[in-house]
Length: 168
Image 1 (cartoon, rainbow, N blue to C red):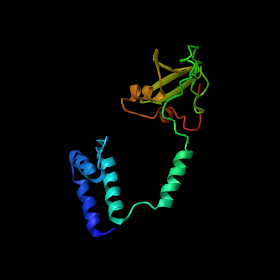
Image 2 (cartoon, one colour):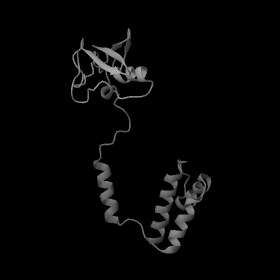
Image 3 (tube, rainbow, N blue to C red):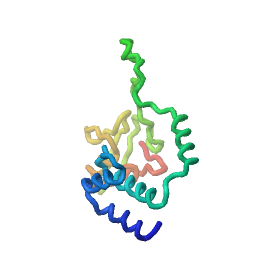
Image 4 (spheres, rainbow, N blue to C red):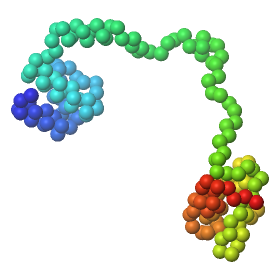
């Protein structure tokens, strides 16, 4: 590509969408339906290069037409859907309860975790869904550690569950 062509293409980048659309009419001889700046810029750059340096060869055009004819291109959705025929639509969503797999570091529900912290003994009971501390149920051990210490802690680290279990 010549430096003059590179400068012309670079100048396209500075144009507004309206200016690009005017240039499109000038180069293609018809109005563009697009208002997308990058699309217009790419099309115009291609057209300017094609006019200056030559377009696709006839062989390349034939091959592109063959590929386009072989492509299974759907323009519209099929009209023969169950809903269009008045039939009930099959259920696609599975309905059920999913339970999150429990962390292997946690003991079984019913176990009591204990921790000494600043002279007080912290006792937490492991529940099916959550943890009980001081008469309240919490979703995580980290929430309990924050209540006890006033700072953010990893609950597993606070209760020593990073690989070994401390239960009562």
